[in-house]
Image (cartoon, helix red, strand yellow):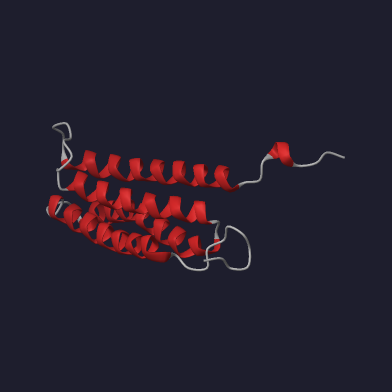
Length: 140
């Protein structure tokens, strides 16, 4: 499981593979549901929403691609975040998660914003968990 360095993953393992499937399915489902909700919207507005809704999945794809080179804890955090973001996004857009009565656009604006917040929080937690302790460094 190591790549010659302690704590570094050489491959993602089964959770990593499941996270990839979740990101691909979550992005396809989110974009499809966004298109269904806004099929009568002007094409330029629809294109802007497409970029906004897809952006967290693009970031997760980049992170999943880089994760095998990271420490095991950081990779597992990103894998878990990918699963949660993908499932929550599709559930929110499919209205399985109760949302206040509001125009469809509201959900497609707030959903990616919440996903970005979750990704940033997970990245910060992974970074802090794998960063060397400042108190452990010797002072000269």
